[in-house]
Amino acid sequence: MRWLRAGLLVLPALGVAGCVAALAGGLPAGLAPAGTDPAVGGAGLVRVLPASDRVLNGPRLAKVNSLVGGRGALWLTGGTARQNHVLYAIDPATGRIEDTTTLPSRLVINPGDLATGAGAVWVAVGASLYRIVPGRSGRAVARPFATLRHGGLIGDVVCGSGSVWVDDTTHGIVYRYPARVSTATAAQPDAAIAIGHAAGAMTIGDGGVWVADPDARTVSRISPDRDRVDAVVTTPSPATHLTTARHSLWVTDGTARVTVVRIHGHTRTVPVGGEPTGLAIGAGSVWVASTWAGTLTRIDPARDAVLATIPVGERPYAVAAGPRAVWVATLGQPVMNHTPAHESASSTLRWLLPLCR
Image (tube, rainbow, N blue to C red; front, side, top):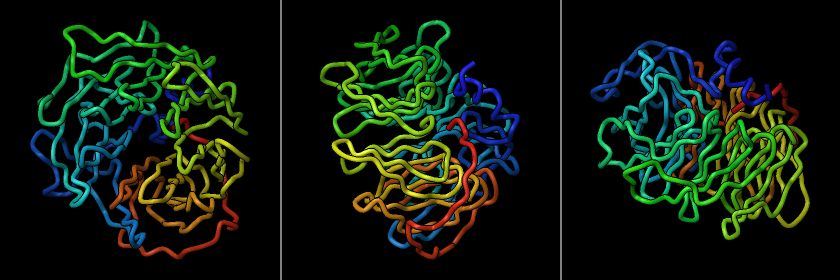
């Protein structure tokens, strides 16, 4: 079994939430809307203010898997202490949970299961993709928008170019679906693009859809105009997270660095905290959450330079960035009201083997 699918099985036993967030937890009093299931412990959220790099606390949930911003909210997938699979909408200004939608699953198993775009929130559950329209889909969804063929498992979801893109991590294929309103039957893909033996992290930007093949240690760029791979980049190690910024591809591979691949130029690396497991672009910066170091690294994409290393708590593993706030999910206790010391990109930092997320 290849490393990504094996990671889906071993991470819960290791107590690390990358593919499955599996610790019990709950919400502070007053933050849980009707229908949620508070508990003790679990995963916490912290909010980092880009204007000052100050860290503030957010809600605490039983489980948190993925984070993404869009449609005026922070969206996250997670679960309750009873294992219900839930999509949460959080007000980015107050940090309060505004709404919840229950999904038809009792497990959170997809490494990258969440995207926004085309007027909807897209959530992967196993081999199925669900389309949730805020304010219209109700408090629960049952019928999938699309489902992969037998044996498939969605590894990541992105939305752009009028389509929603999902990759089948077990077959190494990316499917392109029209991001239309809804259909009476499951949507059929407009295109199926072979990537390699496996398909993992994805991102969209700078003229393409970028897909990691962890087995081959490559990242392929799909042209949305041609529905085919038009470029392949080799990475030093299997890519775990991808994003694009300033005509560059940014890659984490689990080591204490971020690889910056210039789309029309050279490749370089930027040192970050040990075991980077979250990557996002927002507020003019690239943000990297590092599980081993317990930090959020802020990088200037114009200079490939570290602007700040911010302690955010124990075992941060997912990050979403917007213009006014950067959100980080942590498995341990968060660090609140911290004002970081800024440091140069030449800092020597520890590294450890990557998580599958």
